[in-house]
Each structure stands twice: as C-alpha cells, then as structure tokens.
Amino acid sequence: MSILRKIRKAVRLRLHSNSWTRKAICLAADFPNEVKFQNSQIHFSLFSLTIVQNQQEFILDSYQNMCKLANMASVKFYKKDDCIIAAFPYLTVEVQTAEDIYILKEIYLNKEYGFFFNEKSIVVDVGLNVGFASLFFALNQNVAQVYSYEPFKPTIKQAQKNISMNVDLEKKIKIHNFGLDAEDSSLEVEYSYDQKGRVGIHGVALVKDEHKKIEQQKIELKNIIKELDKIIELHPSTDIICKIDCEGAEYNIFKAFENQPIPNAIKAILMEWHEKGVDSLITILQRDGFKTIANFADNQKVGMIYAIR
Image (cartoon, rainbow, N blue to C red; front, side, top):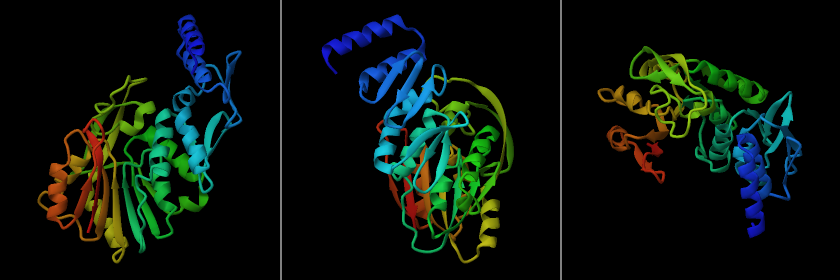
C-alpha cells in the first residue's frame, strides 16, 4: 500500500466511528481491485457478492480466509434467501460467523482431521458444533457411520441445517443433542452464538476476544462409556475413531478412563486439548497402548493430540 493510500485510509477511519463502515473502508483500501465500497454497500468481485451496511459483518472479518478457501479448495460463496452459502465441489453449508469460516479453513484446507482410513470405520464426533467435521468424515467412503454429540440447542440447529443440505451424507450422520462426560449431569452455562465453537461446559471461559452477546443455556451430559458401549454393540466388528473437540471438557471425559481402559474398539483419537496441557491425557492414552503425537499453538494453551493403536 502506498504512503498516500495509507494517509487516505487513516483520514477515512477518523471520519467514521461505525465498525461496519470502518471495516469496509479498510478492506476496500487493502484490496482495491477486489473490494468496492460505495453507498453503504460493499461488493466482493471474487465472489460476485454484495452485502449492505450492518449485515453479514462477519464477511469483513473473514475475507482473507474466504479467499484462501476459494483459491485453494474451490469454494464458492454466494447469498441465498439472505444467507451466505459456502459451496464446495462435494458439499454445501451455510456460514453465519467469522468463526464458521475459520473452522472451514481448519478442516477442509488445513486438513486438521485429514487421515486416511484403510478399513470400514465408525466415527464418534464429540463436539459436533455446526456439523463441518461430521460432514468431513462422512465424505470418506470407508466411514460407515458418524455419531455426533452437541449439547447446545442453538448450535445444533445450525448443524442440522448444514447436514440436511447434503442429502447423500445426511444418512450417515446421527445427531445427539447432549454432550459426553465422565458421568450423567445437567448444567447451565454461559453461551455466545457468534463464538459457539469455543463454548463448552465451562461456558465462555476459553473465549479470549470480546463477547458479542451472552446468554444462559441448559445442557445435558451423558456418560461416555455407556454411549461407547451402545455404539460398539451396534457395530461389534468395526473400528472406531473418536474426534474430540469440546473446549476443555476433554479432561472431564478422560476421568471416565482413569479406572477403566479405553475400549479396544477405539483405534484412533483425534483430540484438541486446552489450557491444562497434554500430560494427563497422554498418560492415559499411552497406558492403553496408543502411540501419541501432540502439537502446540503459539500460545502453548491449545493444540492437537493424535493417538493411534
């Protein structure tokens, strides 16, 4: 960006206090050939998409990630019935927040769960969120069924919509409107829809940025061992892969395995860890014969554990 353009951008920002307008001006200045802001409308030429002031602000926060998905994963973004749709060559979902776009990038571009399954498998998705990971697993021809768990009703409503938009995949996904834990319980926790991917049994404790809107949600949790036993009984000779991304609840879940081994049917666990580190989780995994790899984000407070046996 030239010095003159930077000066003009700074002057415009001082003239506008509205966040939507400020973000629009910045984006148009940074991408002058792709983004046009005029008369309270902003047009994204890459997507042939126009939005009006104070609507779909998350696009202004997510534009660069959307460009990456478009360029590297052939994703098309368009508006339908006032909703923003992300259409991959092989599936279609609705995106409602900047976090949705980020999670799509993690799963479908960064391939956070991009493992090859050589044999027929069952996936247990602990932390369905809005359904992106469950759909990713369902795309795999060797995945016979995905059992998905999400305790928050507003979140699961979007997940159900996303999954229903993909008829061929929908039949492989069984949604459960409760979370998994070491024991059955009911909780009331703080919840933020815009940051729903980081909300769990500890409410919004893991959300580091500003909360846009907080409400109270009642959630149900059920014993993970009992749920796994039901799945194993239905699929007695099929390997199980567990994906666990439940915003800190992984430590509670693993308490169920402190005095009882992880069932032999589980051959792989793909798990995001938070805040408390990896030691207690890896101790149990290695005790039960898993080989483990852990990675760490820059802040050392979140990362992934990949465990196989």
